[in-house]
Length: 495
Image (cartoon, rainbow, N blue to C red):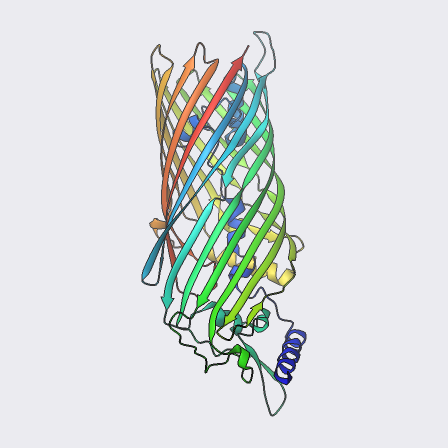
């Protein structure tokens, strides 16, 4: 009883004196990845766009143009309804220490519906077109799993303890150290010094959803200007579980994690579950320009103003420690809510298209300076400054490339398409393996004067990424991603 009282008193002293922050590790706090998650350009619009590598900023005339280049809305001649359904398949091979583990996750959603309305005009009037609709351009569908025996001391228990975290203290895996001469509190320590089996999983879900209004006007013959205002709203949920287990009985019944407390003998398992929940919204504006040289050549571009996101983040915690004595400690930390803002960077896009009767070829590039991402809002100013400095040191400017082609079989309404997307990694000095590469292809069929269209697109992407979700003290976790999307879209046009 005396030992337990001493332990609780010491723990309280540590919390009061050091003001322990349970968010001492990257995987328990905001990081540069949170800004990047909301700053990546969308990739899922409609099947025709996707099958041409999203090189669509010159030829689009459906609701999709609102989010790519609103000026091309001016090409619409009829009232147009469109919608899309998307299937996402995410495959991840994770290499951790000497082992690798495969995992996959799927998601299906209704990704778009929208309307385009050309204002009725006489033959001498310029084209004025409006659009309104919804699009789920980004999803956060992701999975990470790994497991291996780690013979070193690079463990989360050590990581948490080294940062004087309340988590390992409350689970009786670490204890405070006090200078016997001065009575000064020196910090925390643990007798658990590695040689543990480490196992973890991360399941992510959520999306960026846009509700958009756009317009385009032909202010001179074949010269179009457009703009759109986009309200982004969405959610993000990351469920992270982590285990450290004494599978080789390194810490037997003669080893106590709290000296003098026999119930803490025979450490068996540490478990931590960290659930991060976001609700967010933001606004942005996009401007576009298009010049058509008859129906032969088109050039144009767009500028996306930074999105200002407001985020409400909640952290939910669950955890246990188990011992051979039967003792099970449970983590009891209340939900922690944080409010802050994220600003995405500008996006500048330029593109061109050539139409040769039955073949259309398009290409475009987008410039993004990811060093301009920023944290803001109600976040504590020193933490905000540190995160923004981290962004400046880690990120750089990139150019994303897209190209596509469409072949139309004369007099049949049938078409075949193919495309390529190359999104550079925004990390400084990143290897090309971190660049995202996508191959796309698709088929389309239309009736009459295009009054009804059905399009099918497939996309296959691959890239490698590093992972630091579990703190800097954990060995490198490398990931090889393969992602596939199948998108079905329909379009209806009315006079």
